[in-house]
Image 1 (cartoon, one colour):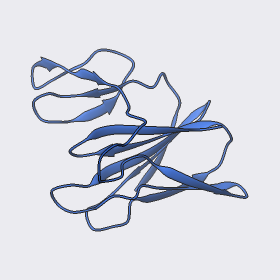
Image 2 (cartoon, rainbow, N blue to C red; image 1 turned 60 degrees about the horizontal axis):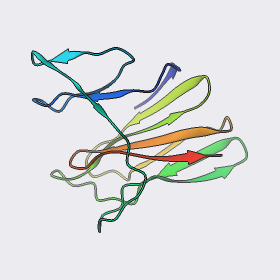
Image 3 (spheres, helix red, strand yellow; image 1 turned 135 degrees about the vertical axis):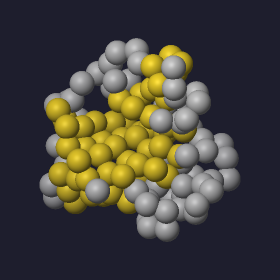
Length: 124
């Protein structure tokens, strides 16, 4: 499922109890606890790959994460944040970790792993 939103300050927050991840500029509570702010990783020293890669063709950007998509370890979603908008694709176990969006120039790309949290790369 792909979704598109108007851009806001990009702050990811995660619940320490249930693992829920949200995009919010305000502090939030979940499970009666303050959610923690996630900082995106941009280097991958592990065997698995988490950092998104991308290819631009005409007005489309194809984003891929070379990662397993198994029940215990998978990429939950891919997000592209441009100057004005946020594009989001939720992924399912067993499908390839890939998303295609309209290319709008400079952006930040994020992927979220259920075990290793948030990863990012900049598109200049």
